[in-house]
Amino acid sequence: MTAVPAWVGVIGGGRMGAGIAQVFLAAGAHVAVVEAGGEAAEAARGRLSDGLEETARRGKLAGDVAGVLARLTLLDSAAELDAATELVVEAVPERADLKADVLRAAESAVGPGAVLATNTSSLSVTELAAALERPTRFLGLHFFNPVPASKLVEVVVAAETDPALVGTASGWVRALGKTDVVVKDSPGFASSRLGVLLGLEAIRMLEEGVADAEAIDTAMELGYRHPMGPLRSTDLVGLDVRLAIAEYLHRTLGERFAPPQLLRDKVAAGELGRKTGKGFHTYP
Ligand SMILES: NC(=O)c1ccc[n+]([C@@H]2O[C@H](COP(=O)([O-])OP(=O)(O)OC[C@H]3O[C@@H](n4cnc5c(N)ncnc54)[C@H](O)[C@@H]3O)[C@@H](O)[C@H]2O)c1
Image (tube, rainbow, N blue to C red; front, side, top):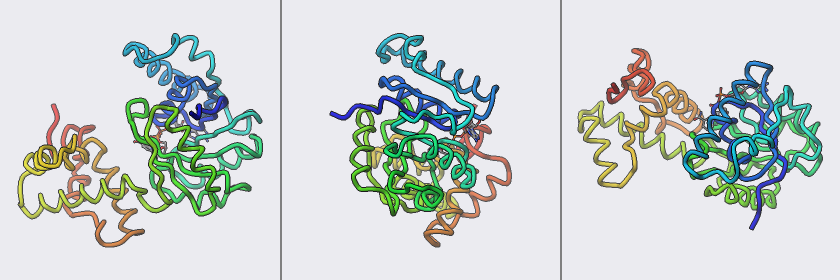
């Protein structure tokens, strides 16, 4: 069975990056997290150590937290990544220019055999590859939030990705105890494309008065055994986040992703879901 790479770099130690670093550390890798400066680095270290403490509390960490954290290094720049790094996962904010910059810096620092990956949730992996000297060594590894608890990673294959890399990356995902699905680079990959479409149709049904939000969610939860109905799930993700993704999918895939007016109205009214206490449902 494939093991995780011994040396991993993670660029960006935010919500996703810290989670990605955490699961590789827990699986035995040495991990270098690149963050933008002092305070951000300390915040990333805090997120990571809290996450590992939680895993340990649930009895799921091999070894003690201090021992695992001894394999963590924090760096100020991707240019400082070690030449021995086998895998670099980029998880900086969702901006193509920023991602291209850090990926280029990482590519120059690591050896020619290293694999570079992006955790982008919506940008084209093929377009990001254009920034690189070795696009054949690049693919998407789309982790889900929260990374330690989520079972899924989409392995996103860009136009120039070496097919041999796909099997290697899938092996690493399985070595993390997660399930890989291999997807061709295309807007929304497999997960968002289907998940967002269901959410948009549920909102259109609400607009048309087919049923109320509770009934629509219950129909999917009990009738189709979805763990969470499409409106509750939109509340969890954030209505603003869903609207941004729908607008992108509308532009790239067509009319069926046109955001319903009700979604726009709720976002304009500041009803963004759980984080504001109100979306399609209300939260105490
Ligand atoms: N949040 C989610 O649910 C989710 C799910 C899947 C994928 N993603 C994707 O993951 C990526 C990161 O999202 P996030 O939610 O973790 O964002 P975040 O804002 O929590 O984290 C981004 C981190 O990158 C750091 N950063 C900024 N510029 C940097 C630089 N030049 N070098 C190093 N670090 C830098 C920031 O300080 C921050 O800690 C995005 O591409 C996002 O689309 C997010």
